[in-house]
Length: 475
Image (cartoon, rainbow, N blue to C red):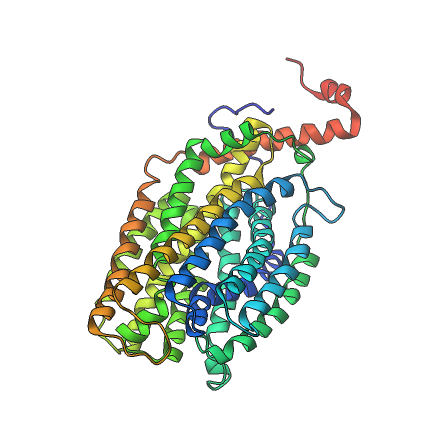
């Protein structure tokens, strides 16, 4: 186990990840982001339109996500012990992507009787494949970029690239002259086909052109639940886990309500609702890299706090824009999306820093396991939002079937659901980082010790412990 360095230690210079490598790696996020929009915003509405009730869809999605919570820790344990000729994370993407493809097609192009059990089955298959792919990508990024600032940069760029997929899928009505519209039941099979074609193409680019190396000291770690407990109970990780849950819940409460809110409460057609979402998600193309640069000056945790304040201001402003005004609403959506894009980028980059701290202090590379903690909180957040808002919609008498005219009382209930939760939750999320200690200076000390330890381990593997002892300076 490496010793903790003295204060003031400086990490050796670390090369920045090249942009071609960042773009190749980030290509995998493009179809995954498009799929996330379809699954998170439009899939619940799609199955409601097929005749399944709000409560049944909410129960099905909540059940799947509750089971899905178990997937990530199990996958991460195997992932941290993976050692193959083609790397640690690449094999998991190669296995996971075909599973996601199959589930995507079955969910978006269902045949026969549409039942809750059908939705549960294929959502579970999708969740299993997604755990392999998303967790693999998250952990792989931590190995691709190792320095404090380069992580902010790489997470910013890859998140911005992923937004292209979300924007592209939302612009389908424009590209197809209204023939394909997200939210329309007849368009969903075509959207499924687009995703099934895009996923393997991105996999090929990512897998062929992204390095996937395993540090000598990290090969096949011995695992105990005590090690896991120590890793996730450390102060920095506890703060990150709670903050990630709150920052997921905040914007997440608006996702299942989005189409209903902007269609019925704000008066936009389904096609224009999709165009508005382009501004929200498209803001991430600019926001994610810019927040990454801001973090290089302010530090990651301070950047999250600044973004939380900005989110509250922008979300409040969006709510007071009069009904039916497209351009002001689009500007408001861009502002909200710009601020919200900081949350995922900064949290994942901060988790990568914790993995270094754990490896130094515990002598264990538990990168995938530690990342599974925040992917799990994201899933818990998604579970809670659907479980809360859909029953409320049912309670206020809101009807989600296409073509139904809702009462003013039902629409008011919809507006209240959309308004209050996001701002409060995001504020609490930002408050978790008062007193956060793992900043750029501390991380530089950690990287300095890790570089020294890894060099010694590599020398020992080549020459044996005697040579390392002889090479060490006399004490």
